[in-house]
Amino acid sequence: MKGIFVINPTSGMQLHQNAAHVAAQRLLKNGTLTEARIFYTTGKSSAYNTVKSFSRGEYDFVMAVGGDGTVNEVVNGLIDGGSDIPLAILRAGTTNDFATAMGLPVDSAGIARMISGYHTEHIDVGRVNGRYFLNVAAGGLLSEIAHSVDPDVKTALGKLAYYVQGFKEISSLRLDTVPLRFEMEEASFEADTFLVIVANSCSVGGFSNIAPKAKVNDGLLDVCIIKKLTPADVVPVFTQINAGTHVNDKRCIAYFRTKKLRISSLDDSLSFAIDYDGELGDPLPLDIEVVPSALRLIVPAKSRKAKKLLETT
Image (cartoon, rainbow, N blue to C red; front, side, top):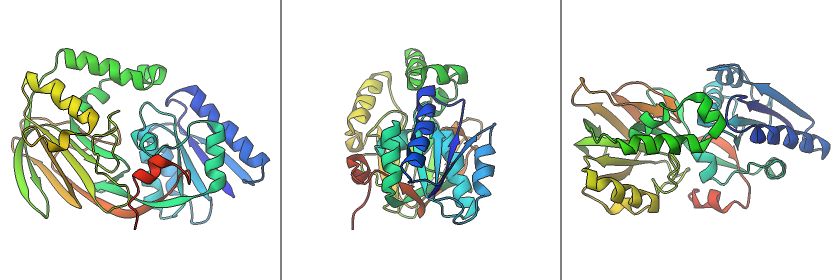
């Protein structure tokens, strides 16, 4: 087999990046790979442009080594390029919720085993205003926190950086909402919205149960909307989200599953920060839809976490 490791040198801990090199060496030594190419990203869109240029059969896998943004570029490059090359992920970034939820390895031995096993699953992706996302399109508080963390701090502290910034935000938390309209094939409604999550997996922003009903191959996206909150609601609501029981809170939460969703603002004078897989996105309105079986993902064949997120037939 031939593989390429697309590495973001500014993303996450150096230890994880080294694991990619060691895994490549292991795979070459044991004969699994006849060729292992290393590509370092050089800035925004370099991963996307490189991966998009690949032709069908040029590689047996592309491994994205970095955070959510790096993975997102690789995903978009694979789909836009039409190469149908399977995706592998080494979660080396600040959060990388999707890889964590799927139980993908971070150590060189685990990575080598996963590639050697070469077990692939067809998975869905989301598409928003023509751009693909693997894990989430989010708007509101989490987006504001994510984009207010200094990049150098993220590289040095990893996931801790988000928690540090989160505590700063919560200590002076503004409970501002924006009136939004949500339109689906099934129904439409309006809500004063504090936070909206459109998820492909169960894990977003370090919360592992924010979309507890999510499957990555069921042809649906899970939508979690946090509506207007009082200061007394904040701790109980986020405690419920941490436990995955928030789906039963009809007063503060709207939770549903859909194939298509349009989100628009009822007050254009108010901003509502949106990001897709951690990258700052377009302003409202948003047209979001699921793209079933858009990617082939390499997963450990015996991963319990992966099996939990895969719809069985």
